[in-house]
Image (cartoon, rainbow, N blue to C red; front, side, top):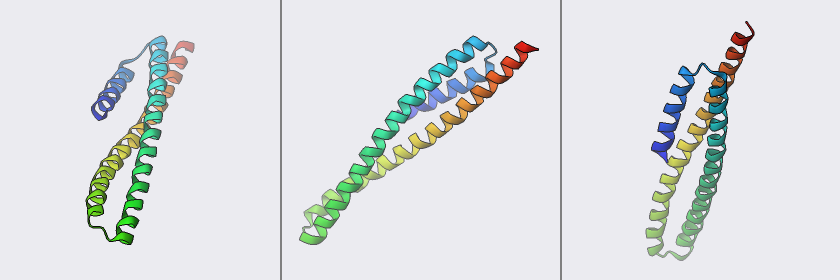
Amino acid sequence: MTEYLKNYMKVTVSRLEVCSDPAALEELLSEHMDKIAFMQHERLVHFLVTTLFALVLAIFIVGMLLTQNIMLLVLVTIITVLLGFYIKHYYFLENTVQEMYRVYDRMLEKRRELAAKEVS
């Protein structure tokens, strides 16, 4: 997913820079809005999974402290590592969606510029 998003953003920005046709820009805008919707959904799912992992981690930590069962330490360690990776990926998704919003704003600005050129 990480490479896919990085490639998509690179291709989209380069398409935006060379776009001079209003119809092509509208197609790009529509495609970009679809991708934003997909990534918002992906971000929500990862947020929920990350929250669930944090809750499970807290439960296991409390269980480990109350029972003093050293075997729970293994589970706590595994869940902590998984949670770290989920947080890292969620951070990437959050920042990428924010960047997608900024690119969308640039697309709208370009649409205004192209519309002004057509009027002139």
